Every structure is written in C-alpha cells, then in structure tokens.
Length: 214
Ligand SMILES: [Zn+2]
Ligand SMILES: [Zn+2]
Image 1 (cartoon, rainbow, N blue to C red):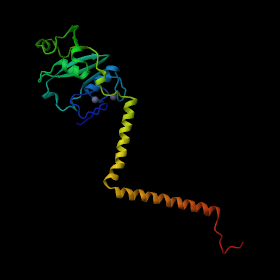
Image 2 (cartoon, rainbow, N blue to C red):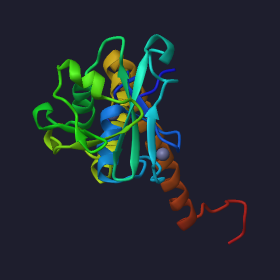
Image 3 (cartoon, rainbow, N blue to C red):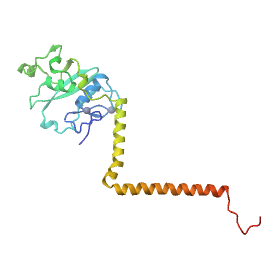
C-alpha cells in the first residue's frame, strides 16, 4: 500500500502511524502535532492513541520483531515500535521521532530514569509495554511547517502551479498549435462580437422593406 504523509508529503514513510480516526502520518509529523494537541491534524478528531500503521509500512511485523514502547504524552499513548532484530536503541528511536536532542532526552519508566544509551543495562531495564515518560524539549526549528492557514496557502499555490504547468506544457511542446488555437479563439470572439454589434445596429435601424407602403 502506498500512502504519503498529508503533512510533509513523504511518500510511503517507513514508520507511519495510524490514529483511531484511521488517518495515517509519518512518525515525526504524528509526534509533532500530537505533542501540541491531542487531535488529528486532518479531521480534528480527538486522539487518545497512535499505533504503528503496519498496513502501509514496508516491513510486516513478523519480519521485524518489534517491541512496543508505550510512550504517554498529554493524554496520547504512542505505541512506538523498536526493531529488536537490529538492536535499535530506545533513545535514538524516540529522539528521532519526537525531535528531542539525544543528549537532552531523559526516559523515565516506573519513576526511574532509564540507564544511558549504548549501555547493556538499558535493554535489561527497558520493559516493553510499561509506560515511558519523555523528558526534554523539542527542536522546533527542524520540523516541517505546521498544518493550518500556511499549509492551505501552500496547497493552493501547488494546485495553481500544477494548473499553470498544464497550460504551459502544451505551448512549450507545440508552440505553433498553441498560437493557432489562441488565434482561432480570438477570431471566434471577434466574430461573435461582430454579430452582436450587427444585431444592435439592426435593432436601432430596422431595414425598410421596399415592398411595404410608407
Ligand atoms: Zn510527515
Ligand atoms: Zn483524522
């Protein structure tokens, strides 16, 4: 299944997330708008959870051996998959998804700070399925533009560009045909205008019927 993130237009994001309203986003965009407000960026439906969208991801969960980290923020439960086959580090995964610099990211589970990344203690201490609390501030300047008026204008500009290019492309590929069609159009306009003027003149100065008596 091919999908593109409706916010950043990334095509077939490897780590897409699906919301209860069934709208799907790439992991960073989902993390970003849900971090600010627990509502879908497309339909505004309230969101309580975000789960891996296995249906649109490239790799099915069987070949992936994911352990699910349960990350809670502002009433939203993120089920973040961690590739255990690749020994993916929870710090790196959550830092990338939530755009929190890794040196400022603190993971707390059951009230305890998890061991530092890259240490063997981390995997032992991490309990998949047990809620993780994220501490740290996000890097806002690295994020794609927020949905809203700006995005609407951008979409309109893109649509306008597409329309313009659909007009310009035939002109570029066959200028003579385009000129002929424009001239044809102008001739039609001139002819219609001429007929209209003629009808006006006729109405104001009706032609006298020579056979009729005065
Ligand atoms: Zn995205
Ligand atoms: Zn939605």
